[in-house]
Image 1: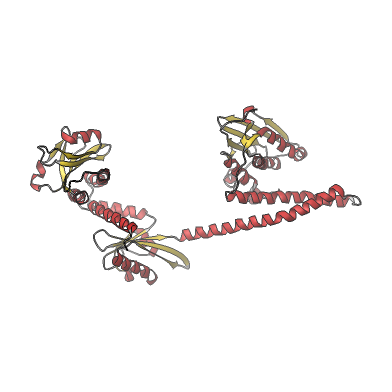
Image 2: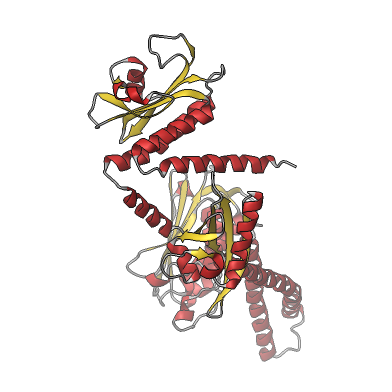
Amino acid sequence: MSNPAFNETAEALDSIGEVGDCLSRPTLAECLDSFADYISRHLGAKRVSIFLRDSADSTEMFLCGSHGIDENIHQDMIISNGTGVAKGVVHSGETVVVNQAVSSSDRYRSGSYIVAPIHLDDSVFGVICVTERTSDASYTDADKAHIEALAKMMVMPIRFHRQGDSVKKKDEQIARILSTLPIGVLHLNGSGAVVGGSDKLKEMFDLTGTPKGAIEEVFDSDDAGPLRSMHIRLINDREVCTESWSRYVKDTKIDLRATALPSDDSHDVLILVEDVSLNRIVDELRHLDDLKRDFISMVSHELRTPITSVKGAASLLLGFQTDGLSDNQLNMLRIIENNISRLSEIVNKIVDVSLLEKNNVELIAAPGDLEQILEDLVERHAEEIKSQGLVVIRTYEENARRFDFDGERLYQAIDAVLHNAVKFNSAGGTITVETWRSGSIIHLRIRDEGEGIPREYRHLVFQKFFQIEEALTRKRNGAGLGLFFARKIARLHGGDLVIQDSERGATLEFTFTCDSVVTE
């Protein structure tokens, strides 16, 4: 049964092959004649002529390629820039399509015709004239687009010719292009013999010199089998086919995927070989990362219930059942309550991070007061601030105070940054908190006077579980999730969290996008 998709693909490949054949002709005249023949076949035109200037400043165009025109009058066919349809095409740079024109004294322009410009270096260097269609059908927009596309393709051989490039130079250029491709290209003839191959192919299969000969002579048996199989299938079915197999190089597994393509007018075959080992490794790493993320999420969810129970029991004992307990026992209960609260926060943060990674966090935006959140957070850390002798300086702009945001999530994000400013500050240092608005952007900057964040670690601190002290000496507690979480939340609010340069300490700046600031 006919496969429409395959037929369409085959037709496209045939067309590409024909154009490739035109481009591969050794001289410009042969190349343009081939294009003219191609146009005649595909558009059903009796006559096709391609005119070019002999130099950029020439006022005349000479016939350089044709179909259906007597070679004896080639030299007599010259177009002046200042006459006829060519004048309009040259000056406008636009294609002209005329259907069923009245015959004129011009013996090569009657009925329907197309005149299309050939652009070179921002000027019209030539024209393509397609005349006298064999059928009564009019030229369509698709025909026009086809001719214009071919005009662009002709630029390459014209440019080569003008620059005096030889066939050898073209071959060298093609070889250089092939050498930059990340895939290997193998050329087989109709009998399956190797005609040539790209540098990448030789690198993949550790081949020396120019690969030539039978497939089984050039390649190892493990590689020759799939290549031979593709060649046979392609020759018999004329369908694009693929093969995948693995080879080992010094105990290292290399995964290969090859695609065989038919030539347009011969039994030659091109086989494109791709090393897909990296794809497999990436897929495996992604799968492992998904397993790790799911495991952490599952464990965190399972820990929530016992943590809640222990926390509730400790709070209950401290609140109502302290009679008969010694001071040491009460202190132990307080340690249990404090640490279980800290553990609860870590577990909740891990769950939140897991949701963020899966894009399962939906913000619940509502009119909020940024200044109030900041004051609540300063109050929350008041005991730590006091114990370290820190001073908090606030500078709030009124027009940056109220806008729509998710209060709970923003509270958590800012708390992570402010907590770091307290934890990593120098004793007796200052924490500066500033807000301002520029257009629809709300800015929040938090600066401390601690050791700061070394420049070589700035691109790492927003990664999960990364802590600078792990790379140096671990002195403080923390899960390394705060800045990762804070940046994610900021970006969900249409902004970001970045580290800014500062002479002392660390300076982090939030931005949030708001379409309109909420006013009282």
